[in-house]
Amino acid sequence: MLKPENLCMAPWTHTYLSPQTERRLCCASREPAQSFTQYIDTAEGDNEYTPETLEEYWNGAGIRSIRKQMLNNEVPDACQVCDKKLLNQDVYRDYFTHLFNHKWDEVIPSTDADGYTTMKPVSWTIVLVIYVILNVVCVDLCLVVVGKQKLASKAK
Ligand code: SF4
Image (tube, rainbow, N blue to C red; front, side):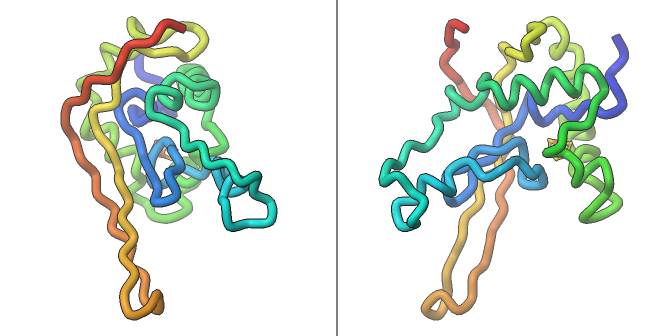
């Protein structure tokens, strides 16, 4: 099978963690906020703070649906930033293709029809927010780390 044009390697190789502990496909994806209503300091919050673990996220319903869409050459709603080049012409999807195209051969054998994969994330975006001068200036640092990680295998 040839790699679908709209398939991005991120859902098979990468994970993103925001300062609010939201897990996302990457720093460009636009999934609905996961934990906003969980904030303990909002009226909408339920005073419970339960960040999702990487193990829970990596083969959760959301990302499995994304993988299925990409294997069908569909563009997930969360990936309009790349598809429509909303931020720049040199889109982040091309960056993941450049970094991880050599892993495409692993995608089909490792991915079930429901989007579950035995591949593991090998790169991470960790966003650090530094507040300066009594929160007047806020600097976001986006750090991408590529490496190896052992993620516990879980039965489906
Ligand atoms: S297509 Fe773009 S927004 Fe979607 S996961 Fe890949 S890099 Fe992120």
